[in-house]
Length: 119
Image (cartoon, rainbow, N blue to C red; front, side, top):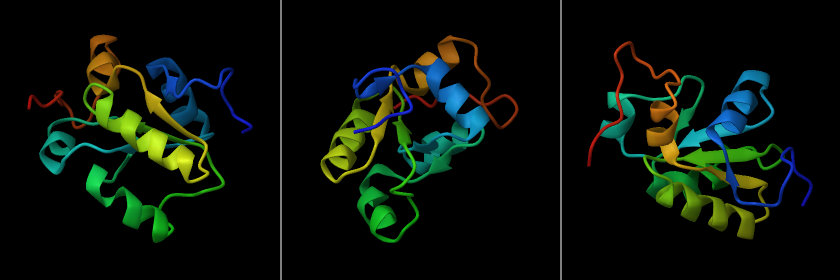
């Protein structure tokens, strides 16, 4: 599988995700629940709840020809999504550490004053 990333690892760093968002080389999908999305999110990401991913892919909302990076709060839901999408032929990744690591690294969240939702 050809990749925009240096390794075949399923995980990419928040730094790699930020770069992909900035230059448009990947679609970044937040698979968290609506209340988590509303509390705080990464600008430029698309929200598709985990249980709606399959129908979003079938409906063409997720571009099969462009790498996709999934993220969630800590990385477990997005890792499941990335594995399933790779099995279906997508160039798919999971952002390591999730939005919690993104926030811990002092990367911005929206809306203003946004935070990582607790479960």
